[in-house]
Amino acid sequence: LNPGSNVNNRRWPVTSYADLAATFLGRGYRIAVVGKSDEQAWERAFDAMAGDPSFFDLTGRTKVPQLLDLLNHAALVVTNDTGPAHLSIGLDTPTVVIVGGGHFGCFVPYPPEVAPDNARFVYHKMDCYHCFWLCHKRTGKSDPFPCVAEVTTAQVKAACAELLSEKLVPTAG
Image (cartoon, rainbow, N blue to C red):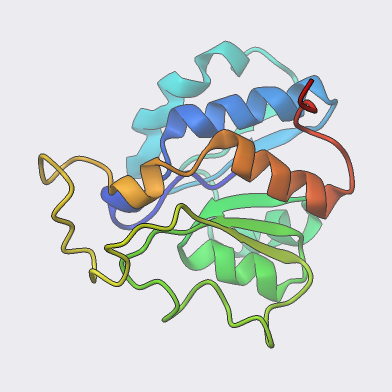
């Protein structure tokens, strides 16, 4: 899991990443969380998993070569729209990218004719897409962009399940 991004407002809520981590741990997966050392503040969201031998908080502990190795050997990568997303896709690792609307279509999602099979782009489409991150829907500058915050855990789990070819979300009824 890569909950970070160079811009805090473009991050999917870390509590949603923690929910996703709990789901995967419950399925027997090992979880590694990566990010820059200044992103360690999110570790509180993962406190419940800290003692689990299948949970690894590698925040601030990897350099680019180690990150590439982790991405290359992962069963799945879930990330915000940031550098590691493109690296993971380039390494042919199944990758779910959570996308906001600021530059929608400029960098991600990739056009369908060139999008690789190992990538899924998850987003909450809004009428204000292409705002170049000059969001008028936030109440404060430190608030997350609504287009990112409103991506649901169910959407992300469905994309993960597609790439892993297994059911991660309950069926209705």
